[in-house]
Length: 216
Image (cartoon, rainbow, N blue to C red; front, side, top):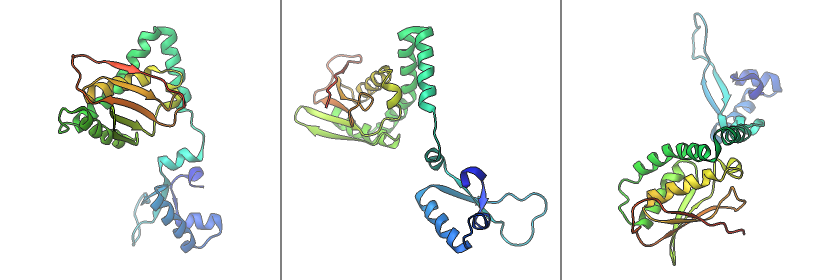
């Protein structure tokens, strides 16, 4: 009903659903706690009577996504197909690099105090990526470190255009300051995007990125 009507008061919802104001408010309080709705004062045109204005309730963006079908991935994939058809592979790579440039800048700023050790930088990067919605964590293994991303915002698009994964891997390499290996990606069907980070610093300048597929 909130999706269909937009901003609606508790009284209006109660009348439409045949529920008491107290019952409606219990539902709305639960939805507020879950982040499914927001409340704001009702806009009143002209002179307003005494008392506080009524509150109206609206769905949040997260709740709207669950209420209907969205085609953002389809549009993004179609756009990349158009770029590939009209500009070639180089244009797709340039687009992918441009898309992750802003992410790289934000992560670099968040890693200012991480020092130069690649593993320490990987831990700082994991925190920065988590703040960006990637649900990342870093861990130490026998051969160095491992950066895992448990969520990928562009997984469906990257399944057709791996240049997005490659651009992201290049960013990880630059930010941690060492050669890295991509062992698995969500876009390729793996459960987690996994990047191996050797324990030694990069000996030469430039970006060295190796992507290795491992089916599991």
